[in-house]
Image 1: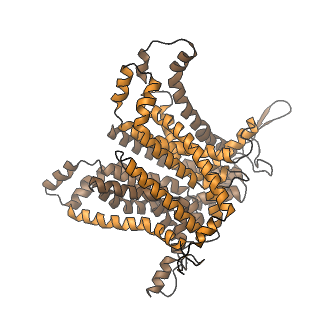
Image 2: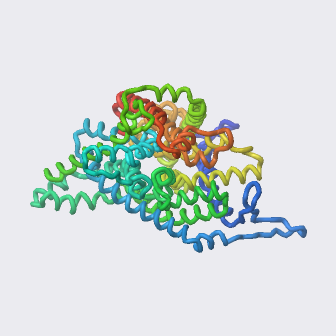
Image 3: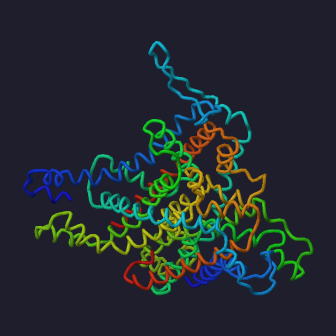
Length: 311
Length: 266
């Protein structure tokens, strides 16, 4: 609203409000997010250096005032050392990243042809298909994960059908395995991959494809030389939208995974709710954040790139 | 062209089957007579009756609806302000930081948001005495924070598509900026506000992890009750609940889609 600069400054409270209006409009969302999004990370960081004690709240204070007025600072780095010592944490981080990486890849392979097809559909069909992609996203995430229990369990739908068809006599064990976790992740995060891919593919300049065909390239060559390279920003954005939240996923491994399915979101949850060790839970969260910094930067860059294209 | 097109159409059909098969199975088995969810034993609506006689589920649903309504309404105000500032104000101190804080909640794992907000609330309570204890208020603050990010994204794209010359014309004709916002900008972006509000409402209604962290005694939301039931195994009344939610959402989206034709699909 820089256009208001030319107006004559007004007197009084109303005038002050109008001149400061811009600052106020910026300040309200800015400080809300500062207080309830950014500063909490500082608090987590602080508590990750505290000591777990039996009290309310169950952690020690970093700053204490000694009798002679000196502020004593006690930082406990042991929480981070503990993460390194106990192999549980390292393998949980590693297996979360592995599960997130593999499921992002599978989601990409499932989503790409769908996004490609929708982007090339006539307008009416395109809108219907897009709505069908978004619709499951609007229904409860928790209930969509729950639906897979009925499908995958030992006397569930898949096993009943397979045994009825006579394909197998023994039911397959699919529940409480990594397989169930992968299926549910791909299932619930599919819309997050399809939408950015679609947004990218729908903008693709058709004349490039025609030119490629006219010059004698077959459709596969055209796809790999033109469509795929141009859709890289969409691939990055979609992949990060899946990868980042999946690394910290709790609901899916808790409901469908077995005791061997190690994921850091579940470890953090147990550390907090079962062991009530808040400082270690905070250290787990800080390390997870550090691991996610690079993917989040990638996502920001991909999104900025697509905003600039659109402008 | 033809070859990849036919491959992609087959893949799309399979993809949609994958998306909808679990939802269809939830609905079918909500009408199953048997308590064994996946063995068909005849048509029955008894699980719906049982659902509406369960005071725990009804109470939690009421709490969740209240939280979702207030959070979505607050998120619309804050998210629209954030989007307006980011799209229309060319440059200001902290613009990059604000746009980062709008993007990050969209992907930040729930466990991190939940833990960090809980620790913030506890620190604030010991420093200022507010919020005293945890419950509805703390859940509403948490939900407003992540919902406003979704609202901001939806409104941002609508503001970006909007013809800015409309606002400029009104300003040139002497209208005050605030009036231009309410008379020109707001009506144009209203479809985005409606979808942003609905999206926030459903996201809030759906959240398990963040609410579990910042909730207190006596404030069990619907997902928290569902989760504790589902952990013990499948139960047909949850299928009935899922069916009701799916039907409401499908009707809502259909109505929205027919009412808001000019808007792009999302």
